[in-house]
Amino acid sequence: MKTKILKLIMTLPIVMLLTITQSYSKDKQPSIVVEGVYSGQNIFVSNPYSGEGNGFAVQKILLNGKVMHLEIQSSTFEIDLKKLKAGDKVKLEIQYSASGAAPKVINPEALTLKERTSIILEGTYAGKNIYVTNPYSNAGGFTVKQVLINGKSANVEINSSAFEIDLKKSNIGEKIKIEIEYDQDGSLPKILNPEVLK
Image 1 (cartoon, rainbow, N blue to C red):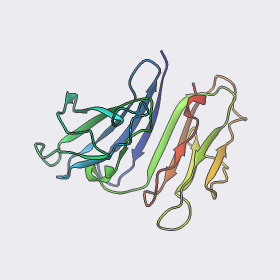
Image 2 (image 1 turned 90 degrees about the horizontal axis):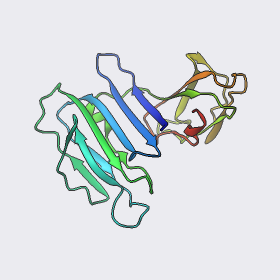
Image 3 (image 1 turned 135 degrees about the vertical axis):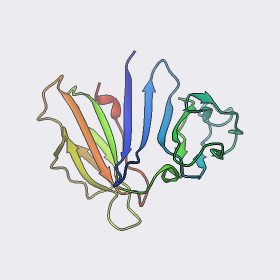
């Protein structure tokens, strides 16, 4: 079984970290994992319909490894964290149906401060390039600000609604780490084909 992991890491000027991880596997239910520090606010989730046509996408919520009993059969729901204390570490796992669209955490900043965020994709180069959607930022311009490959700034044309990350200079089988830095003042960029890094 191969599992591909897509990480979003929020870099902060103080010791606080928000990580959102999406896991994809043929044998396991996909999930979004949100980790951070509780600041007194609840989390809200946008919950699309299941592709199977029988209810909504989200199937289960775990808080720090324990199943939460929530009303999740609606298009938007709240994850109540009020039993926690300010400063407590939070790990939320949102499991959802693989047959439809993924749910979205509406206010991930509730666990930390707003800063520039990175999508990190790691894997083994198999001969194909990566394609990324690049939404428009509310602050002006496009959301993606920089692309790094193995820690070095890459020469990628990012001033468009979609762009290609050319990996042809890499060797087949080479370990690749792609970091896409973006501002949070708009929709999230999306890697269209994360499966090409094995």
